[in-house]
Image (cartoon, rainbow, N blue to C red; front, side, top):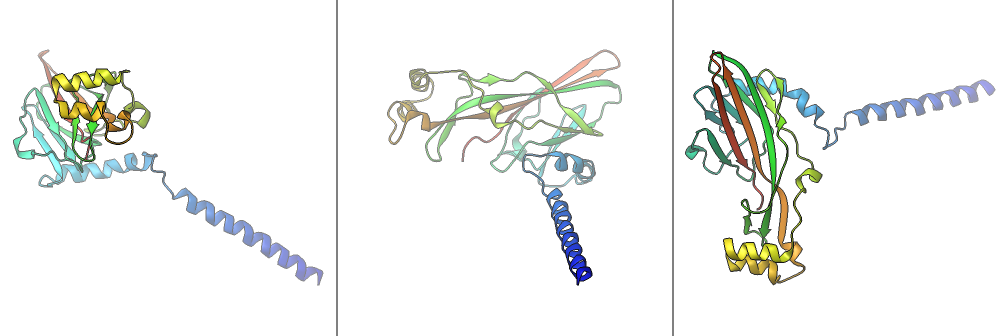
Length: 237
C-alpha cells in the first residue's frame, strides 16, 4: 500500500511540474505589442522581398539621381504626383506607417553616407472628424539622431513613444484662439473659445505631425549631396 501511495504521489508531482513546464514554453511564445525585437529580427528576410518586389503597389519608390528609396507598406494621398527634389514632401495616407526603408545607391563614386532623422510634434484642432494641423504654430523638434542600418541598406526609423509624442511648449487658451483667428478662421477659433460640449482642452490633440529624414552622400571628389524628406503622418480621421 505504501509503495502504491508513493508511486501516486510521485506521479502527481511529476505531472504538476510537467504542466508548469508546458505552460512556461507557451508563455515564451507570447510577444508583447511593445516589443519590436521579433519584428526587427525578421527584417533581413523581409528586405530580400522588398528588393525583388519592384511592382508591389504597397511599396513607395522615390528615384533620385544618385539613389533610389523604397518604403514598404507606405502610400501617400498622391503617389503619382510626388515632386522629387532636394527637399521632398510626403503626405501619408491613413493606413500608412513609417517603419523601414531600403536604399539603392547608384553612384559608384560614393565614399560615405550619413542618414539622420528628426520628429516634430504638432497641435491638431479636431471636431469629430474635421481637423486642422497647425504646422506653422508652436511645436517641439527633437534632436537629430542617426538612423540605424539593420541589414545591408535597410534602415529602421525609430519608434516614437507616447511620452515623446506629447512633448510640446506650454500655451494658453487665448494664445491658441488668437492664432486661429488671425491665421486660420473664426470657425476654428470658436471651437476653442466657445466649446459646444466639455472643456476647450478636449478640442485639440498633440502628436507627431512631421518626420524628417536627412540623407548626405560624400563623393570621392569631396562633393557633398544632401537630400531631405519631410514626411507628414496622418493626424486625424
